[in-house]
Length: 308
Image 1: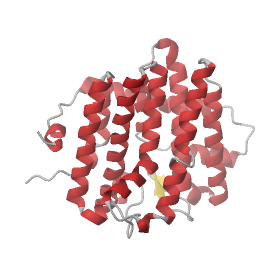
Image 2: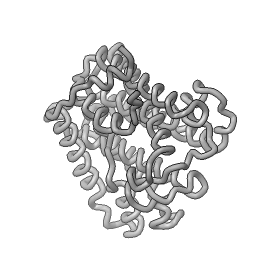
Image 3: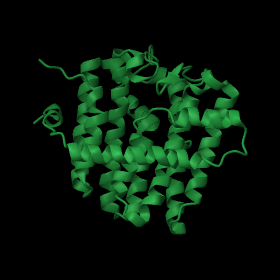
Image 4: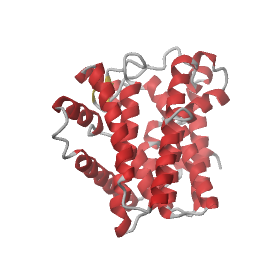
């Protein structure tokens, strides 16, 4: 059975999908809460943070964290706060990625990018504010100190010079030197995969998974993140910006799996990562139905299957 067969044969689970969407709604509500009480900061900065953070979004990363953590009633509050911190970090990275000195994007999450709406200076300040607030939330979590330390270490590594920052530097100044699929996959790992893995690993920390289980969870999230990035590269070439709520053709002239090998190869690469992700998920012991519903909802719809 091929990767495409496995993905096509997935049966939709309405109850699992409803559960996933309920978690997304809970994350949305918590994001509003953690931004409240900000009356002592400049209104323009608050507005910029809200503009970027509360914009329409799938919230895949925080929802994934929650699904892996599977918190009980006692731990749910802390997990939702951590989900909010992760989404703040992700949103801050998008604000910076969209800046004129980087991708110079005009639209993100169905609205003007933050620098377009508020100016570059306020956009940069809002990204800094979201990043610092995220780590403040982790510092305030009602969990054992060792757990807080582990969570902060995992997220800071994903954001820093070995993670998102490194990926953005390669994307801006090293992309022309990429010549094969292995090098592009390494860039995709830095740009997208590291934060997916960080979210999954933080969920595993909350769940107190052993090292073997955590390894499977990390492997699952790595393949999932790479699939998401390849799917985004496919969308960049094939859809109207109004259809996905952000700029397209931003990778024009850049080395991607799509540009080097074509859409069919990129589609198959994406499906192979999905197959590998599901195999690792099955081995991890995590409840599969909601996570597979998440993948079906937000990843399968990105891929145009060959019907021949």
